[in-house]
Amino acid sequence: MSLTSALSIALSGLKTTTAQLQTAANNVANAQNPGYTQKKTLVSSVSFGTGSGGATVSGYLRVTDDALSTSLNNATSSASYLDTQDKYLQQVQAMLGSNSDNPPLSNALARFQAAWTEFSAAPESASQQASVIQAGVDLAAQVRNTASAITALNRQVTNDISTTVTSLNASLSKVALLNSQIATATSSGQPTGDLEDERDRVIKEIAAITNVTTLPRPNGQLALYTPGGLLLIDGPAAEIFSYDGTNITSGSGMNVTNSLNGGRLQAQIQFNYDGSPAAVGTASGSEVIRKLNDQLQAVAVAFTTSSAGPPETFAYAYNNATTATGELAAGFFTINGTNDASSFVVNANLLDGSQTVKAASGLGVVAALSAPRNFTADGLAVNNGTYTDLGTAFLSGFQQAANIVHSQSLPAQQQQAFYEQSLANATGVNVDSELVNLTALQSSYAASANVISTIKQMLEELKGIV
Image (cartoon, rainbow, N blue to C red):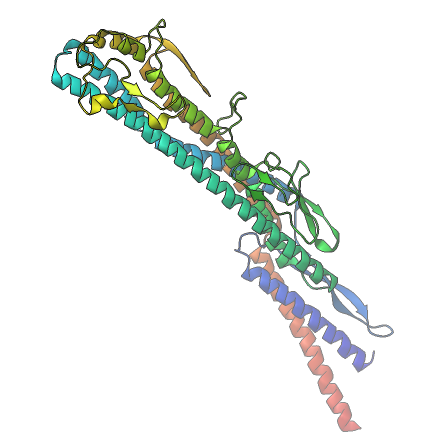
C-alpha cells in the first residue's frame, strides 16, 4: 500500500469520525429536550485504489417508532378533547356555584318560598310585604345574572373556536414548510433528523386540535389527513380553514364542521352546538349552552306561566286570588315573550310601591310552590318535584356532567403521558451509552490523526532522502 493510499484512508477515517462525534455530541447536548430523538451517522466503506479502502458518511438515521407515534397522537387528541370539555364544565360549575354550600340560584329559590310562607302567616305586615318583594327581586336578579353569564360563556367559546382554527392553519403551514425543507435536505444528502423532530412536534400540536393520520410521501415528506379522510396537507400547500361563528369551511368552501373530530376543536364545537329542534345531545359535553339556556328558561317560565293545573302554577295561584284595592292584580313576575330569561323581573308596580302584594294570595301561592309537579327542558326532566327541586336539578345535572367528564379526563391524560414516556424511551438518547460511544470515537479520531501525523513525518523524511 502506498503512503498516498494510506493517507487517504486515514483522512476518510478522520472525516467520518468527526461526523460521528458531532452527531454524538449533539445527542448528548439535546438529550433532555422534549421530543428530541437519537440521531446516528451511517458509515460505509469506500475504495482508494487496489487493495485499499476507507470509510465515508453514507447517510443519517433518526431513531423512530411509528406505532408509538401514532398511539401518542391518538392519545393526545383524546386527552385534549376531554380536557377541553372538563375546563368548560368546571367554568359552568363556578358560574352556577354548584360546588358551594349555598348555590346562589337554589338559595334564592329557597328564600323566595320561605318569604311567602312567612307572608301567608301575616299578610297585613308591611315588613312581610317588603320581604316577599325583595326575595322576588333577588331570585329574578339571580336568573338574569345566570343568563348573562351563559351569554358570556357562549361568546368565549365562539372566540376560542376562532383562535383554535387560526392555530390549526398556522400549524399546518409549519408542516408544509418543514416538508419542503426536509425534501430539499434529503435530495442534497443533508441530515433531516432535527427538521423531522420539529415536524413531529407540530403534528402533535395538530393532534391536540383535531385527530390526524400521517402518510409517507417521497423525499421524507408527510401527508396529513383526518381519520375520516379529510385532507389537511399533501404536498407543498396546506389546507386553510375558516370559521364564521357557526361553521368551519375548507378553502374550497366545503362545510367541514363535523369532519374535524377529536381534540379540543371538536369539544369546543360540541359545547356550543345547538341542534334544535332535534332532541338535545345526551353526551355530557354536548350542546351545553343550549341546555343551560333552556333549563334556565324553564325556571323563569315556571314562575310566569299561569296554569290551573292541577297543580296550580305560582302565577295562577297569585293571579286568581282575591284582589283588594291597591293590590297588584296579576303578574308578580314579568318576562319578555317566552324565551328571554334575561328579562325576568319583579313587576315594576311592586317595585315602585304603586301597588302591593295581594294579601289573599299567600296560602294559595305557598301551596303552589310546595305542590309536586313535572318540569321538562332540554337535558332535564323533574318528576314530582317542587319549584325548589327544579332549581336543584338544574344545578345538579351540570354538576353530574362535570364529574363524569372529569373522571374520564384523568385517565386520558395518564394514557397520553404513558405513550409520551414510551416513545421517549424508545427513541430518545441514552446519555450513558452515548458517552461511551463518544469515548470510543475520540480514540478512533486520535488513531486516525496519529496515522496522518506519522505518514506526514515519513513523507518529510523521504523528501530529505531525495
